[in-house]
Length: 307
Ligand SMILES: O=C(O)C(=O)COP(=O)(O)O
Image (cartoon, rainbow, N blue to C red; front, side):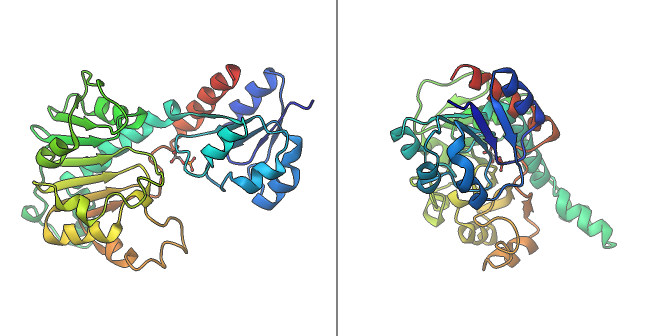
């Protein structure tokens, strides 16, 4: 039986090098299309992916030798996890490789919002010197609400140590997880006390559009809102509405409901979002740093060894 792995996305070369040492034959084809993958996947026991295309029934149909999927990253929303399980195909991912990047990015977005970095920078470039309009807020003494306390949520909490904040975390699927970085609370407490809301949950059928008008409505205090998870979890129109009403003081979004151009520019909310001074946008790079590029592959190889 062949022991071949097909890499269909851009992975650090260490993955290929180490997989070869484990006895695999590895085809590294980051430019491969979905159609080309479908045509040749039958020869492979493993596929290494990021988020270029969906790993779904059609792929599984064509991949009759497939034993494992190696997701070079955290999110599994582009993989039909249930079907993979039914077919006995193992799944490994590498949130440990990019959680530091995400945690730091979330802190960066938050500090940028609280200190008006975007607005201030733009103004000075346009000849405006406005100190009063750019007065910021301090993190110290604030209550930070984390929704989802997996690798990403924990990393964000860790990075906040030292800012003198009260870090509260809620996770629908976990209890008893209070640690020195965050204390476990109910969702009601997050809603009641948070000055900051940061999402660290996966995109699933359950979480799709979960953070909508109604969700924000219940928050008692004005919040800074951070999303480094998945854009489809959040209703962007609701974010814009609450920014207008002052309930959201600023939104730092690394992920959007629709991503990449031209898809993005076709969205009704795109113009309003991109012109809003209280919004900071980054192109889904929270987990994608020069450092995480390598770490993700290292983690994945370790997991490959114990498959
Ligand atoms: O690891 C994740 O979940 C990410 O969002 C990174 O996505 P990517 O693999 O860079 O397309």
